[in-house]
Length: 289
Image (cartoon, rainbow, N blue to C red; front, side):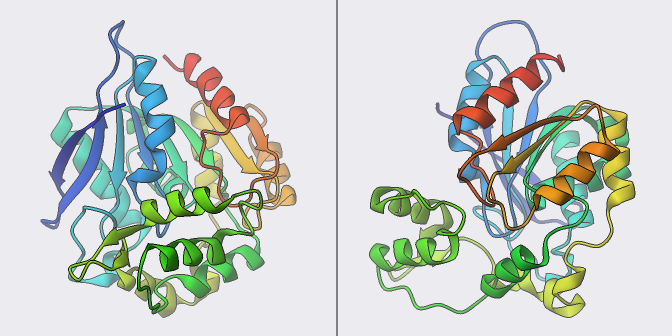
């Protein structure tokens, strides 16, 4: 499904980007704002955003500052969830959206928690994709290891090999065509024609400054406030190394009304176009207006 390019201005003057999917005809429904993970961008939501828009909801899939077509920050210490949350609130203000349902993958889920803490009425419902108020250390170490790492990519075959190298643990059934498509979501063509990663390497600066263990602090109060105050759905990859089964179980105990789905054979993080995830999201959205 086609989308319009939308730009908005952050509180500190950056030009930020979102894919704006117009809703199909029908009664007005709550819009959806989709927020990607740490090193990713709005392209991750291409499949599910189009499907949701076709069901009659406007979808805004954002490029968080420093990613995709959004400006890079002059101060890398602004690459943190509370700043990202205020950027999203600026998008809502500039597009006239008072409240929305949010889909947050990994870091996007943390941003959604921050949004609910800063401006609770803006978050009408939340889909949290493979992230929690704490994370498994092995998954965190894996992500911290490759974020901001210098790499040498000569062509799209190298880009696909890199995508496979850092993500094969999450998508063990992917074939060559899948990795080529994956590479084209996370790389862009550089000025010399070679693929370059589609994010600012300096997004790793706050992580390194705080230490990898501080990437996700204790967010249990933020999570319980989010899931306890509004409809919520937790999506977990069945073989996720970031959101363990134990953490997901404790999240469900803390928020017994939260809906839950597990995507078999997928790690961190589901793309949300898997049949199990897609069905759970549409069932969830049908209940939130």
